Length: 395
Ligand SMILES: Cc1ncc(COP(=O)(O)O)c(C=O)c1O
Image (cartoon, rainbow, N blue to C red; front, side, top):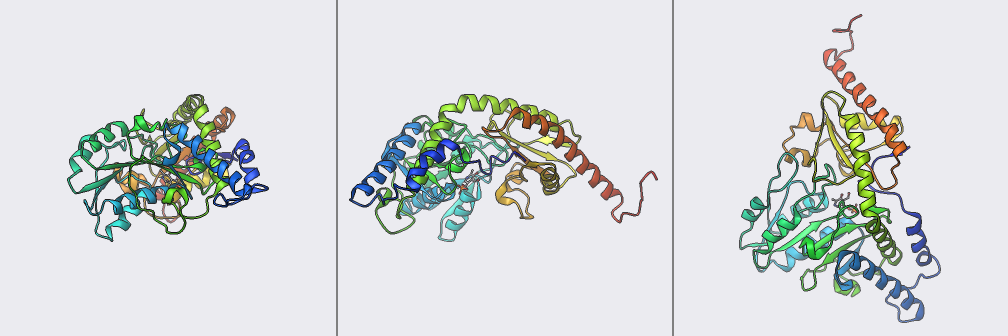
């Protein structure tokens, strides 16, 4: 199989497994235990905080390990919204966020929060001026993702952060889950207050994430129990997972320039090949985008049928995003970008990763256009002859 679904998840890297293994076997102590085994687990966990913090240009105490990107986003948004409730109930976001953000916002509406969505342009970019205009004295939190998981567009977070912080007391949360391996998250430069990442997007284990919380930022813990993670996330820590995240993030950051260069070239080659098919259009921003995500619309096709056709030919990819697979709704991201439902239905996402080889792209360049073209022909024939009675055929 050729795996072109790295935006959904990535394989666990051998060096990462190696770093985790001692803590999944002999070193199984609880980091809260006072004895030597507990202290060794604590030392491993402390080192994981330090490694992640150093790659973020942050302090180890600012990093909270979670059960993944979804929990990190929930903790940031609910934690900040509730902590700021006495000051205001208005939350500002965009319509292209991952459901881990969008559905969290919907949930908060049930408790009296007002959620305002600032639109995006055809490329999926937010206008910092429009965002600025949506912030009132009742606003406590703004949430904007860094890299979009469906179309790959990167938001101008530094500019957005400047506008947000011109309003006293307003926090900026950034869902960087999809962007983390490809964009430098130096938090001093980025200017956010809360940043979420997830290990499985950069060859770390699934079910482990981290939330960076700027020192002095008050968030309310979203689960009650012990005092772990400095009272911000109760529950015995996933020591091996945290160590895996730290090791994977360290490697991804160190190799980023080289990985990004290679992925961009491979993606451009594959994009050129698929766009030879009539009726196809690349989606997302042409330049300000994650290097490995190729998102397109093939008109007069159904994305799930194309993805199935590609799967049968040995290529794994996604329809828009993995999280919406199985649902009949068209992508909320493409809708917000102005694509009508009949076009958005033909959305496809091929996402490359660090382990994608040039030989795999060679094959994909041959297979993908052929499969997409055959699906378009199939749907054209179906439209002309819905009952299969030979109407409109040459014979
Ligand atoms: C942008 C974005 N945010 C959040 C998530 C959720 O992360 P997790 O699957 O680790 O819960 C994803 C996962 O695809 C994502 O792409």
